[in-house]
Every structure is written in C-alpha cells, then in structure tokens.
Length: 409
Image 1 (tube, rainbow, N blue to C red):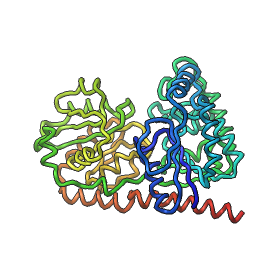
Image 2 (cartoon, one colour; image 1 turned 45 degrees about the vertical axis):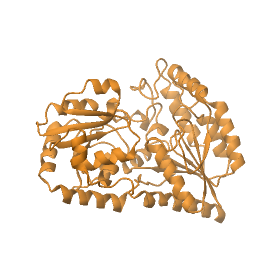
Image 3 (tube, rainbow, N blue to C red; image 1 turned 90 degrees about the vertical axis):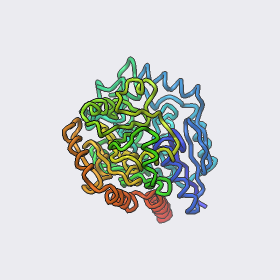
Image 4 (spheres, rainbow, N blue to C red; image 1 turned 180 degrees about the horizontal axis):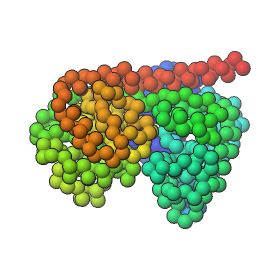
C-alpha cells in the first residue's frame, strides 16, 4: 500500500483545507494510506493527521514576520519535528499545498526534500512561492517578481511586515531554496497561474495544471428558493449573492457597497462571510451574513440566488465560482486571474474591474433569461468539468506516474 503525505496550513477547513481533505479521501479509495500534516484549525479527517507545532510557535513566527519580514523562516524546531515524523511514515509521495501561514520553515523543509528521493508535488494556490513577500500582486499592478522583488508595495499586506522590507532577500532565498528540489512537480490550479509560473524563477520545474473540483453530491440545485428568499427577506426581488471566507479589500467589498447604490428596488444583495464591523455599515439593500461552515446553508443560498457575483480584484481559481455553478447559478466575475476560467458565455458574465455599467448590464441580461434553462446549463458545466472525483483522480494518475517513473529509473 503506497503512502501519501500532504502538507497544508489547515485541514478540512477553508478552500485549501477541504481540497487536501478530498484528495486524501480519493487517495484512500484508490488504495493509498493518507496522511495530512497541518499547522492549525484541526478538524475531523478521514486521513491520519499530523499536527505541526503549537500556538506558541505560530505566534513566534508571526512576530518574526511582523518585525523582520521573514515569513517562512520561523518554526524551525516544529519543522525538524515534522521531518522526523516524515522519516517514520516513509511516504511514497509528498504533496505540498500552502506552506506559508506561520507554521513551517521552508529552508529546513526543502533541505530535507532536496536530499530525499521522494517525489514532491506542490499545488500552487497563490503566487507566494515566487514572490519576495505577497500572495497576489494584481491589485497594485506589480511585476517586480519577474526579475527581482524589492521595495515591496504590499509590505503591510499578508504576510504583513510592520517595519523591515526584506522582499529582495526573501526573493533570492526562495529562488535558491525552492529550486534545490530536483524531483518537484508544480501543479497550478489555473492556466493563469501556470502562465505566471513560466515567467518566474520556478519555470525549470515540470508543470501540470489541475483545476479545483467540487463535491457535486453536496453542492446541487435545491428546489426551495421561495422558502430561502422568504427566510432572508428577499421576497420576489432579484437576488445577487457574494461569498468569501473573509472580505479583505481585494475581494471587492467596497464595490458591493457602491453597487448597492446603483441597483434598482427590484434587486437585493446578500453577502456571506462578513465580520460584525462590516455588517454594521451595510446599506438597507445588502443583507450581511457572517462566515458559515454549514454547507447546507451555503447550498440554500447558492441555489436561491439569481446571479452569483465575484467582484474580486485578484484571485487564482475561486472555488466559490464552481460551487455556484454546481448549484445551478450563473456567475459574474471581474476579468482577473483565473476567476474567468470556470465560466462560459452560456453560464456567466465577465466584466472589467470596477465596470459598474457592465455589471448592471449583465444583471439585466441575466434577469431576462429563462432561470430553469440557465440553471441546467450551469449544472452541466460543473458536472462535466469540475466533479471533484474526476479532478482529484488526476492527482492519483500523477502520483502513479511519478512512482512508475521512479521504478523505471
């Protein structure tokens, strides 16, 4: 029985944690033994879990980041302990996800990975692996990462540094550290991110794009929209929905506020994932809901919405888009990152960032279409392209291919 070890900030929580969990589930069904090592937010899992470090270690790592801008260089002892555990379980494949998040030392980890003969897969969920500081750079239109980062315009954004700018040093160190692993396969989850990787210092590595998937048994069109709209006070108004894990500036919260002043009285906006402070400042035609991990509640909202709006200014391959499609709801997204890749002309709308005339026009067009026919088109697209069982089976094929290659050599 081959053994898989995945490493991610969280497990069975948030988008990347759920992806790691579901890959683990698929691997188990295919006869693998599955482990997931994680830094925080422990949840139940079908895989064997390995907790990395503790809250004290995370806090020290946060402090090192805030003062010295050396994110990824704390947690040395915790990472050494992880490597000891890796040597015990002897995985056949090591699968990395987000290795940022204040819980791992990238220098220590990659020193081990470069010495071992274990094939390493790294699913790239953002741009942090090839920048000197940030996870995304579209918001500030920065392309320094193509040659060398310095004087970071987003120093105070995640992972925030309040004092020192070490983006130039971080860039050079990452370039050396990440390229030290010879048996490394990179898996961006969008074509957009794959194209960026080809321009970065990671371009020498094998590159295979695998989109995220969604559980179609959990995310499906429900037939209770009248009840849900009545529950939230929507009535017969055209329901616009936005969902985010946290409404940071790049997610477009202020654009929803501005949009609320432009839509007519026959439309209403529901935003999911807001904090208490954000909910308090909402206008009357925006209904605010705090973050929920209740999938059934999310599916109710997705299914009841007439149009899902993703007004993000920078993103990779948003899971929310394919969750909405799975529930039979068309998607409107800004033309940014890989967000546009999940929709077609029949299942959504693409507008330029901040183009409110384009948003209003798309809302009118969507309102004129047959809702049942549109729902069927959205669901069919999700079924054909984003079934998690199909998408994560691609990882199993990749694992098996790398193992076979190793045996041939």
